[in-house]
Figure 1 (cartoon, rainbow, N blue to C red):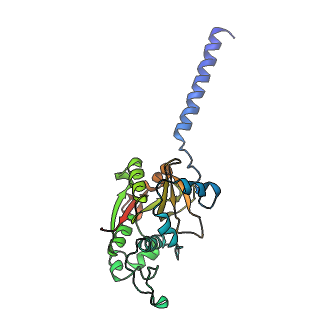
Figure 2 (tube, one colour):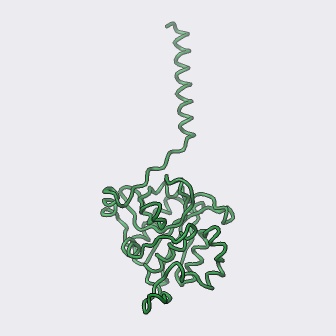
Figure 3 (spheres, rainbow, N blue to C red):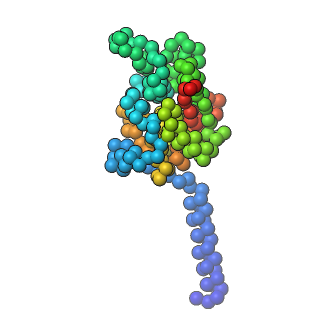
Length: 242
């Protein structure tokens, strides 16, 4: 190979390498596969997790959403029952009281979100927080575009390590490798070593509880919600006043 040909060949190799590198740079990384809680690895993550105070109270009140639009309703029921907020009576369970997906909605919540809209399109991040506050808890909304992955990790992991504090996430499933749809569910734990959060998915007919990487979960929250004025989804910190 003479000098001119060698120079041409090397230039071609470099150009090809740059083109391949650019193509890879433009291709978004696939989400890390969620890890099912009911797998050996998932159970190990729970055992080693550094923030799991919410897991016990939530898992004891775990419910499945009663229809496709009720993910926010089911999540609200779980969180209120886990926080042991004074609940309304349930006629068929007298004298016991508990929140259900029927009695958590009343005239006060209808003023925030009408039953007709709820059944048609579910609820937004801000509507969830407003419904929670109807029941006397404090709900702090964090839209993803006004937050950061570092802030989410810090605030959520801190809350999950404290009794009476809960974290609810509103996200798009595709960004965590779960196909189509958007969703609301509570978080139950955080594992610092793997940097994953445990999502207690209330669509239990579809997915088990899963450990999701912080990066993927934040990306799933950092998506536009056309039902909420194209604002980004995000997370809600819920606690009592005391």
